[in-house]
Length: 176
Image 1 (tube, rainbow, N blue to C red):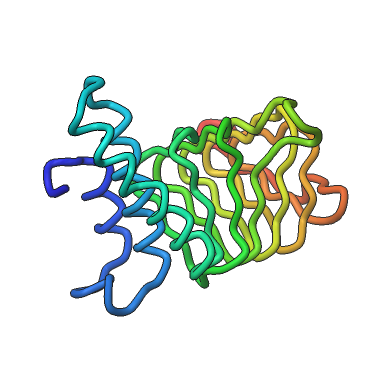
Image 2 (cartoon, one colour; image 1 turned 30 degrees about the horizontal axis):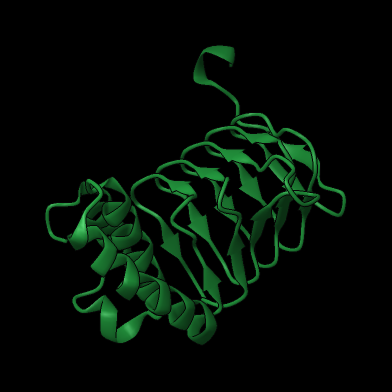
């Protein structure tokens, strides 16, 4: 557990001395990271036994905390979840490093078997934001609370609304 750099980056974002006692979301992130480590192991008895423990723990965490982070999703290091509950990530979603999720966020497809979002680094999701379909969110985006994002979002942009629209974009220093 302590040798997983992604997990260590997740812990670092919590800025707490004992996050397991203070933040329910860290449990879901730990189960996710553990599941990814199991998948990386070679097939064999050890992997089978760990899988037998993983699945009930995943379901328990998903049910108790309302956070579904299936190990099939690819989530970069430094994930931070504020205000746990009602967070669902599709198993085919890709989430970059340093992203922040708040309660009620859904990252998924628009129909069964459809494509899922690809999210850049350092993206922030407001409460109850929905990001759906085979879209791309650029690095440093901010997704406003209760926004429904159905189209690509450029890097550094802030989007709000249902459907979401760009309300501001980052200005590069060399453009000033």
